[in-house]
Image 1 (cartoon, rainbow, N blue to C red):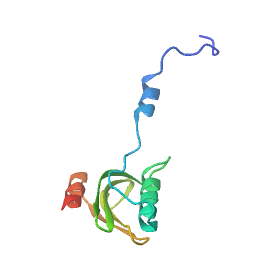
Image 2: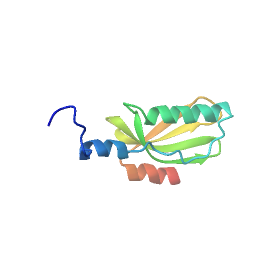
Image 3: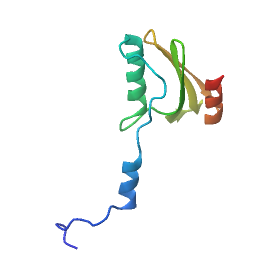
Image 4: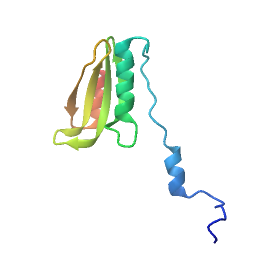
Length: 110
């Protein structure tokens, strides 16, 4: 087939790339507050793009913190799952490692 003739169908491989959607943000944040805007921006940058740092499994807002269960895309010896706590009043975060995604999500809900 000549190269100037357009294809009549899209291959399965190409179609799969377009069906993936970025994760939706489930916690309600007030982006007019600097700490909450920072947390939303950091979470978006860490979980999207060409080489994301992590994939979000679940999230929950607890007062002045946003807790997110994540799977690290490049895991270390500690394991690929963590609960990351982002402060909504200052520029701070910390994380705790878990052996599986289910235990990280369970820890998020307790």
